Image (cartoon, rainbow, N blue to C red; front, side, top):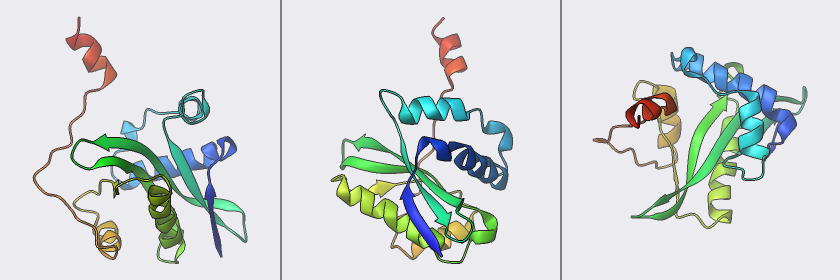
Length: 158
C-alpha cells in the first residue's frame, strides 16, 4: 500500500504542500515563510542542512507523508537526529503508512550513529501524543522553545 523512500528535489512541491497542511492543522498557516526555492537551496545546495523521507501511496504514486530531519549536537548526549516535521496527510492517517515513515526515521538515526532522536509535539495534539507513546517516547516538561527571527537579530545588533 505504501513505499517509504528518500526524498529528492522533485518531491519538494508536494512536500511543501504537506508543510502548509501541517501549519494549518497547527493553527499557524501565516508562520510559513519558507519556500520551495529555499528548500531546494538548503536541501540540495553545496551544503545541505536537512534530509527527508517521503511516504508514497503505491496505487496513486502520490506523496502522502514526509519526515524532514537534520542533525544537532547535544553536549549531554552527543549527535542526535532532530525530526523537524513528521506529516501524514489527514485522509491517510491511521492506515499504517505513518508507522512505516516513523520507523524509517528511527532506522536512519541508527544508521548515522546518532545517540537518539528528538522532536516536538504540541501539548494539545493528542492523536500525535498517543502515537508517540506507542514508541516509549520520553516527553519532557519544564522547557520553553526559544527563537529569534533574522529581522529581530538584525535590529538587536544595530
